[in-house]
Amino acid sequence: MDHRKAYDKLLEKVRNLNYILSVRGLLVWDQRTYMPRKAVKFRGRQLSALSEYAHSVITSPEFTSLLETAEKGDYPEGSRERMNLFWLRRTYDRTVKVPLKLQLKLVQKATETEVVWREAKDRNDPSLVLPHLKDLVSLKREVAEHLGYESEPYDALLDGYEPGLRASEVEEVFSYLKRETLKLLTKVMEARESGRVPRPVRGHFPIEDQKKFHLFLLRSIGYDLNAGRLDETTHPFAVRIVPGDVRITTRYHSNDLLDGIFSTLHEMGHALYGLGLPEEYFGEPVGNAPSLAIHESQSRFWENVIGRSPEFWEVFYPFLRAFFPSLYDYSLEEFLFAANDIKPSFVRIEADELTYNLHIILRFEIERALINGNMEVEALPEVWNSKFKEMFGITPPTHREGFLQDIHWYSGGFGYFPTYTFGNVIAAQIRHRMEEDIDVRKAVGSGDFGTILDWLRERIHRHGSMYLPKDLVRQATGEPPNPHYLVSYLREKVERFYTPTHRSAI
Ligand code: CO
Image (tube, rainbow, N blue to C red):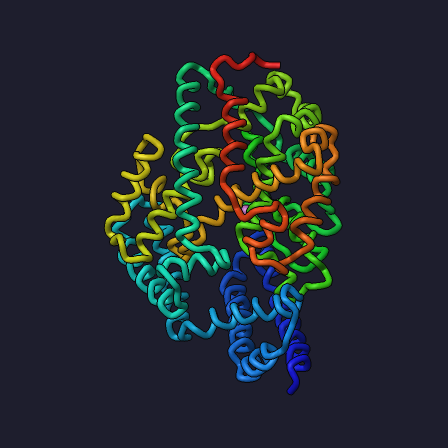
């Protein structure tokens, strides 16, 4: 068969497979929102049947030979064909390099460990889960050996979430970020000790009114509710089912407005990205986001860079007060300060913008050592607590608030954590570069979010994965991910809110 024919046939197969797999998004959304509880068992089977089907298509002799023939074609650098083949080869290699037996063992062990982890967390008892985690780590190490790597086993796993990223690059970014963050944190702590502490925004905020406000916020920014939905779950998420259907969920607390608002803005950022991906590439590898960090950069951009800015609340605070009149007791400045509160805390998902990255750096150092064989699983509780004390100045009172807090490791997710902080790094870098084209403060302050969204669509969204993550960042901002912009963004924030002599409320 000629190369072009093989390519066309291969892509037809791939599109078909991806249309089938896109049903997975709908199944997962349903499972986490409205599915009757008794459907759990068979929903699980539906999902694994889809995965098995995908595996069988990708590993079939026909797929292999089509891929090999198509790859002999001569496609220009950076062409859609070249990029599709690049991503297909990658998926194919990652699928076939690991023996099926090992893959199945891993899935089984991860499922088991996750169940035990929940119990260990509930009971605050590390001894229950550590033996399972030890097995899981050794299976992941085996996987890394099969996948192959140049300098360290951890790279093979990291690459699964962030194509092309190496641990040594992460280390470089993180060591700078850690040093600068700790300096800023010292400043914050001094200001706090001198009495600069925000007044928490408390009260009773009816959930029905919160829902209305969130929808108002989403519409004002430009999330098309004819191309999505907002529902409620304990753990907020966003899911792209097909172009024109990217849904989000959030959560509400009747005594706290902020957590819900920022969860909605975060997921909206993921959704706006999903809706901006090139529709005409749907079903092809190039139609997806290239990595988790790029995706996270979009959610953090709207949640933090835009959503926690003074200009944003100059626009929305009057509306928020109209929805919740008890807020007339809080000045805009008090509200802003509460939304930008910085203080060391034990739990990553509750952390502020500054200390958040320290939580990630801690996890990166530990998981890298575990996977590279430089640390024993048994040492985890102790290493966690001592590193935590070193970075945050406090020791978790329980393991539940320590090394047992996140599901990632216990479900086999090693190499995932760095993508969160890389998302922050990229978001700040985007903000910096955007400023060259748009007066961002002015746009936000006048409620003109369209200009900002158009910029993101033009520079990031519409490219899908026509570039590798690093190259996409380079083409959008002029350089690869550079933590300098995040540090100066955070420094500005610390100066804005934590200068001890800061002017009193507006
Ligand atoms: Co996210």
